[in-house]
Amino acid sequence: MGHWPYEYFIANDPLSTVPAIPVRLVTSVRAHNCRDNRKVAVPTTQTNIISLRNKTTVLGQPNDKRVHVDVLSVNVTSGDCAFRIILNPTLGGTPVFTSVSPSGSFAEFDIAGTTVSSGTQSMTFYAESNSSQFIDLSHLGVYLDPGDVLTISAAALIEIVNAAVGITWHEES
Image (tube, rainbow, N blue to C red; front, side):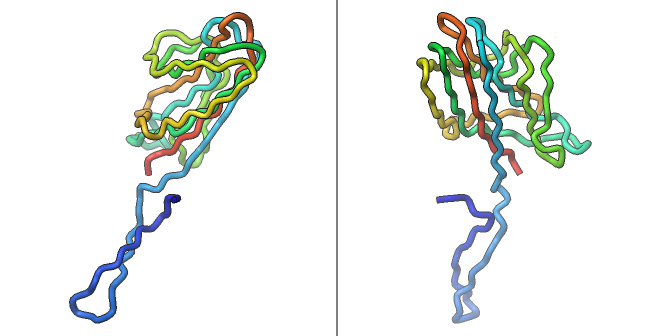
């Protein structure tokens, strides 16, 4: 069952023989967004594949909304790989966060960052060579407060690998 922008319910109107059907706008319906990235020759050290950040300001106004992570998909070729989900890491190289939509999205993403250190490791999972995984995070309540960064990193277990990550999220309205 999908999410609809309106909620309908039927109630009997005590002053009428015709049932009333009040309608109210459900403001919790949110737009879903997604981004993905693939890096070739990922070494045995944790490497940023993609990072998602919740902006602190949106259209010049302070942001008080959360970004909720729903789904991750990963793919690896050329060897086995360890993926990590890390909250607020330090990204090496020169990260470049790009707005998902300059017209009001809370989220921005980076694929330029290289090494990953510190932060809070939330999850580790492994993928065998030439495999893909789809991970539903929606029931875990994974969210980003304004200023938070969520990084999905990868590291080859033995030699270099090619790793791809897709991330899907929704933003509070």
